[in-house]
Length: 315
Image (cartoon, rainbow, N blue to C red):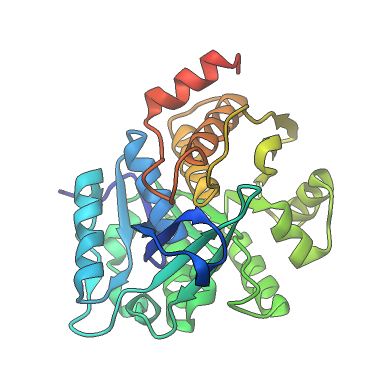
């Protein structure tokens, strides 16, 4: 690919092993291999929905790393700036499924190649050429060097007038709440769009109401706040306008990655100039359809499938 794709994301890709049956991880015998990592899920969604996408990360020089390169090639994600380590390994995680459609995660990521990505790995000219850049709280939490690289990329994108988005994606197992709060709030100052789940704002700010969450994030300088509320849809607050966008009626199988594909859809629609209410409904549709299959990547819909669901359910 010549030049820079319109939308970039930076972070930690992880190979996914999703249980094929409901039960505790130690009792499940069958798994389906797939791909995950929040910002990789995001950028695959962008590409599958028709966007021009690229990814920034470091992979291990192993079979799992090569499987990611194959995935991104198939999906049309530019991986020309992905760093391939001669050693190291690509992180993996396991998903166990709950009766209610929820899931538990077990990670094997400490010391993985993604955590060694650093400022020196960044091609700043590539970053400066993007129209949008996406990062997340997980990206900031994985390691100090990846956090620095993410912050530098966000600053460079912001300087060029690109759209900068960020999903809090709070993971208490990765870092302490006070450290997470400080790091995320530093990132907020660079962001045009911040995505948050109710669990995120409950953990960081002890807030239990979407509108209060939007107020809090706006007070920290965020221009557009999107509070995701699962099956109930989302609340969007932007430019003095605030509205709720209802969710869709679907049969939930596995919600893994739904929030990531939601983010990708919303950023792509925003960059294409869609009205905020239409962008939110589109993102809800994409997130909902992602929850109808197993794993983070395989169920991500095409643009046509999402638009069809919107039409069928009158959104």
